[in-house]
Length: 130
Image (cartoon, rainbow, N blue to C red; front, side, top):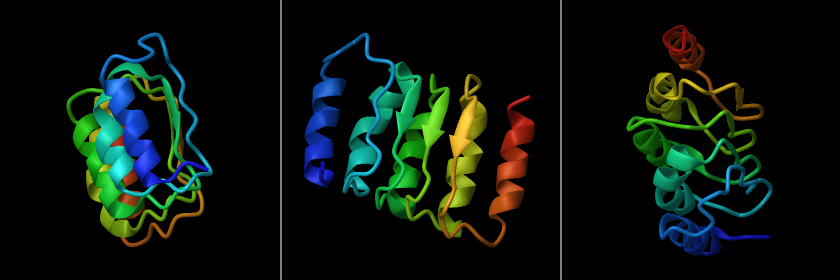
């Protein structure tokens, strides 16, 4: 499996213009931590249509890095954060960036300890996608 350092190396290759026609990158079920989303988010949100990142310990830090890139605009149609250790602290920023992803069709969030006001933040984001 790919660890966080390997994910960062992959991200640098992609942001350097590697595989410009790539539209789907499945990185689920690895050992990616928060550094990978920080490194890959810009390239991923501007060129990819599908980015499954589920079953990786991304946490709130990884979600926040991804949200920052999404706020600049987003081409993603599928985003999978299932089993990514996202807590309620990740929800406001991540869900707040979703309206910038007008093409988003599938969002997977299963098996994360999202609690508190997470559902309210998600509902507001969904309303913003209309």
